[in-house]
Each structure stands twice: as structure tokens, then as C-alpha cells.
Length: 581
Ligand SMILES: NC(=O)C1=CN([C@@H]2O[C@H](COP(=O)(O)OP(=O)(O)OC[C@H]3O[C@@H](n4cnc5c(N)ncnc54)[C@H](OP(=O)(O)O)[C@@H]3O)[C@@H](O)[C@H]2O)C=CC1
Ligand SMILES: CC(=O)C(=O)O
Ligand SMILES: [Mg+2]
Image 1 (tube, rainbow, N blue to C red):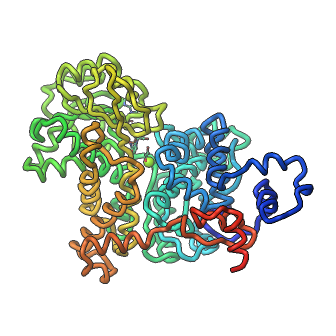
Image 2: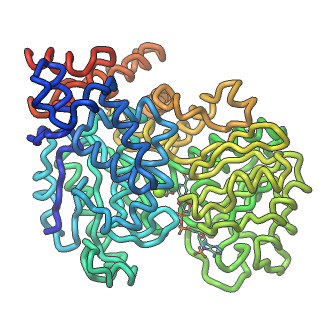
Image 3: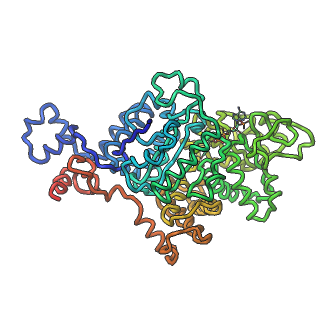
């Protein structure tokens, strides 16, 4: 049975020996004779930092992103409140280290950098006992799980159980961005085999050494899992993540359980929010939009479907809206007469107006369609090259360029490339973060079109209103809500999304609107929220959110947890105060 848990990072009380330098420092401050401090004395005397400052210094001293990732994982496991305090105070700098792009490198090296278990692994052999295994999880009140089978981790392919970095990273964002308590989150990885030969031959690989089970076998496993999860934690919100397409489980469970597919629906919502703002910037009406999508997988078609819904609300018929999209996959432009059997999820957008012509390359498609929007969800680094970006610039005053593939190593173009080859005119969003770029002496700001802007709010709203299921309208509403959170100064800087430093209030707004939509559809099971006005509801949502600054200690040995709960008191004083309680 491949069940491994590490409860400490989820807020579980765990004894731990604290022999680090902080204890010496505390002892010094508490009057311990100086001779006991030995060689550390000068260093200890010079220390006037609080633990969070020291942790940031230590983090800075790590020279590579992966070392920083490991450092932060260890901190999360040893002192969960201090970790989240750092995250909340440094969202913009720490998110790339705990999420994309560095989580991609962490997943690639998972077996090599493995320090401790951080979630629950369920293997195919466990089928028939899933409920019993879930009951062994030490936390009684799990509200949210992110589950992957590791079959399509970011744009990196089948990484088997090494995909665990994704549920861990996404749930860290649930806690950071939306205040879901750490102990209420369950990172879940299904070990259903892998078709990655490198992993199968890697002596350090920790998953089952077998090829992936069949689609039918996986479906039966998921059926058992969904029942087991809901019996163990009734109403638990399930986020499906990084399953290879096609992913039929969404249609199977969508109206039965509280669940959503983040790659299809979360990405769809966040990119729709970006497009709503981008269209305001470009000034081109909906009816004149022509969007070319490089990549027709779960994310690409999910995004286009959300935009179709928006175009229809803006007055187009469904057919008119659908015809604003052209998709390119490994075989070229997707058309009805291309000669291959199209997967189900591609049929809706397949073109029938190509007069028998077939277009193999993106360049040919761009020449043919003359798009206003170029979306990348293809995992092909650099496919939006100089000629294509220049072509888009010749066609549009403000071409909309969204290289959305993750991690950065898979991005269709970088921000710098987009600015350079469109003469600073592109309206830009990427899946992973890029630095600002100076173009003709002006600082240009990239936007990050990543589902992290919505999934925390969707999950939070769904949990709080105890929704029966998560409807398509709830997802759509999250997009519209997000688009309204961009403030004028951000818009003026070309930003399509709010600054990450405001992510908590943004998540409150997204959660509130998700709750309101559930109420309109009669899906909510928390009637007390129905009579609250928006202001009261926002305040109530805020009060429900985990705040690491207000957390008490875990136990006497969790010294650092104790000393993080007051921002102002010197930590050694706080330690003394807490010791009296
Ligand atoms: N920014 C964000 O928030 C998000 C970004 N993503 C990113 O989007 C990317 C795609 O994810 P997803 O849709 O789930 O993946 P899929 O595997 O479902 O789809 C990938 C698509 O890209 C096409 N493709 C791959 N390689 C080539 C190639 N060499 N030439 C032409 N087409 C190619 C595939 O074609 P074919 O169908 O013929 O195989 C397929 O249509 C990933 O990098 C992922 O990280 C995903 C979710 C959210
Ligand atoms: C962001 C995300 O969900 C992905 O790249 O798969
Ligand atoms: Mg994903």
C-alpha cells in the first residue's frame, strides 16, 4: 500500500527537536550565561532579526531556484504558520518558487530532491480499500483536495507520482491566496503507473513500476475514489489537475459532486477574464475578433469554450461565436476534411469553411486567418517566433498575444520577445511569470494568465456555501468577477490581472460571486449567507480565512510557530509570553 503522509505541513501537531541557532538566541535573550553560547556568541549578539527576516535572508542565500524550493518545502513542513506568513507578505516573489515555474523543475527532479512525504499517494493496488486509507489521514476536517494522476504535468508530460509537486503547490496557493486552512487541504496523487520510460528505469522513482492502467480501469478507480472522498469528508471540493486529455471524468462527476477541472474550467475562467480586459484595451469589438489557438488540448478548448460563452452574452449567436476560433494541433489547422478522426473535444471548433485547403504550420494559419488574438497552449517553446509576432503586429495595432504554456521553458514566447517583435504593442499574458521589460525607455509590465487567480476563490466560495456541485455558470461568474478587480493604474500599465499582492481581497470577491451564483441556481446549502448584503458577506468570508499572523502555537516544542503570531513583539519576548499560557 503506497500510503504516505506527512501531517506536519498540514498543521498537525508533531514533536520536533529544535536545536537550531534560534534556541541559542532565545536563551541568550533570556539571560543564559554568555559562556554557554560558545563560538556563536558574536553572531547571536549581532542578530536583531525576527524569524521571518532570517528565513528570507536564508532563502536569498540559496543560489538556485530548486534549492529555494527545497528550503521553502522544509519550512512549510517544520513551521507551517511561519511559511504562510512569509508567503502572504511576499506573494509576488515567493509564488514562482512554490508554484510555476520552479514547481516544474521540482516535479522533474522529485525523486532526487525528495525530503519528506507531503500528501497522500494512492496506488492502483489500493483499489477496494480507498475509503479505509482515506480514513487514516490524520486530519478530520478536509475541505479541499487537488488530485492528479501525473499524466500531464504542466507542459512536461507524464511524470507519474513525481507530479505530487502540483497538488502540493496548488494547495499552498489555496491557503495563501484564499485562506483555506492548511490542515483542511489534501494533496492527492494517484499512482496508476506511468508511460515515461525514463522514470520506469530510474532506480529512485518512487511510483509503481508499471505502464499506465487503461482508461476504463482509471475510470473505475476514480469512481471508487469520488465515493470514498465524499463518504470520508462529505461535501469535499475536488479539483482535478493535470490529467492528460481527453478527461471524461468531468462530465461523469460534474453534477454529482462538488468538483471542477482546473485545466479546463479554471484556465478558461482566468483567460476569459484577461480577454475581457484585453478587448477593452484593444478597442476591437467582439464580432471582429479572430482567435488562433496553438494547441487544442484540454486547456485550449476549455479556454475557447469560456470565451464563446462571453461572445454570446455580448450578442453573437453560438455559431457566430464558435466561428471566431481556429485551432492548430500536431497535424495543422483542425478541419472537418483533414482526413483524420478528430478527438471528441476538438469537434466543436473544427472548421468546415476551408474550401478543401489544409494548413500545416502556424505561419500558414496566421497568414490565412489574419488573427487579432494568438493563444498558446501547446507546450512548444518559441513557436511564437519573430516572423509570427511581426506578422501579428502588421495586422493589428495591439495584437493580443497569450503564450500560456507552463513552465517558462515551454512558453510560446517570452515577454521580452513579445515586446521586441511587436514594438511594445502587444497586449500580453503568459502562464508563468516573466520580468518587466524596458522598451524605448518605458517599463512594460507582463500579465500572468494563470488559473491561480481563480481556483482559490472558486474553491473557497464552493466550500463556504456548501454547494451541491460547481456549475458552469459559477465558473463563468468567477471570470467576470476577476476581470472587475483590475484597478485603473494597473489597466493604464497594460496589466490584465490585478497585482498578486492583492490576491487575498481578489479571492474574496471571486468567492463572493461564486456563492451568489450558487444561490441564484439554488445549489447552496448554507442558507445563513443568503440574507447578507455583499459587504457583510465579504467581511464574513474574510473572517473565515486562515490568517497565519493570528495562529497560536502547536505545542511547546514548536517554538517558531509560537513566535510568529505577533508581528511586533521581539520573538524572544513572545516566546516568554507564550510559555506562560
Ligand atoms: N496558463 C495556465 O493557467 C495554464 C496553462 N496550461 C498549459 O497549457 C499547456 C497545454 O495543456 P493541455 O491543453 O492540458 O495539454 P494537452 O496535452 O491536452 O494539449 C496540448 C495540445 O498541444 C498540441 N501540441 C503539442 N505539441 C505540438 C506540436 N509539436 N505541434 C503542434 N501542436 C502540438 C497537442 O496536439 P495534439 O492534440 O495533436 O496532440 C494538443 O492539442 C501546458 O503547457 C500547460 O502547462 C494548462 C492549464 C492552465
Ligand atoms: C497552470 C496549470 O494548471 C498548468 O499549467 O497545468
Ligand atoms: Mg494544471
